[in-house]
Image (cartoon, rainbow, N blue to C red; front, top):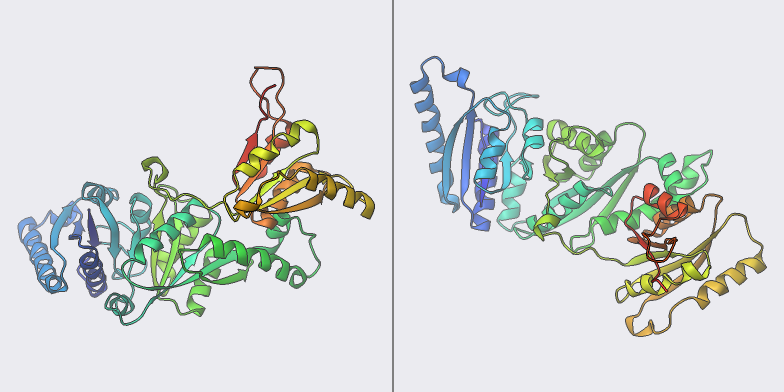
Length: 427
């Protein structure tokens, strides 16, 4: 394993190389200093140019040596945008550090842009604009002030895991930034769309604050900053980071994918963010057995109060870990009167399994209203911030394959959260 620094041998790259060397020394890893040069640049006086570049790299190695890391250099002669990615893979890079190129927009050595490097490399990319905050952090003078761009995506989760790794190098002051669109949130949470968005914003932000804090939790509760927005999310996230005077903006993205909201934010952060920025790609951690176990703190368990649906309730409660909160719900299509409402709640309470006290599982019952049962369940799971939504399926015929009911199938299609469809045991 190693730390890599891609350099264009300018002052910006010198600052990035110093940060990379200090991180490598802290982690006990070698540092590779890599300069990529296009073959066209070597067509005239190839050997003198090559020797000159190698001499500049050797000077950088000597300058960085006192920082404590073992530093090696490589002159990468290639015009391919994937050459640096292949170098990272060959040396099992844990981090790729770059500086501010000569011009905006500009490139590192061979006309390969930062955005292309970020898309091709399967390792976190750290762009250093100013080395001073990192030096102060790595020497123990002060924490590194970091804003994590948060949403409910695999990229955001990958970025959070990387910050946990970065926190081993030194203390981090973590801020969580989230940009939201009010009308989209009203649909997601099942809230009525108001004439004045200021009326609904407090209700939305109460839910979002809890969700974002949980999604950004690295062991220390982050400070959450929300921004209601119109237009490109990336601009607002960068503005939030600027207002909070952070040292580093961190976002997640998916490699080999230039589309989508996260990729847009990553592209914008690398090019225009006035502070240092890091882009963290999604890695197949689960395939390698390295993904952390998710915390299931809240479950939504749905029943239509039929005997078949009720048989799945004990299985759902069995999944609840100690200290969890379980919301047992049913959905009715019309607004019920107070008496029917009390009756339905009592029927739900009667279905709560006994013996939960030793595990300190808290149960809440709720009667939901909606003509579309699946949509009502999905929106309730969003409002409750449930980590798991459990419901039953209707099996047809003895030992034949279970067929999902229409509600279960629609929930699977609508939900952005994990859904567990339970089939009752055969009798």
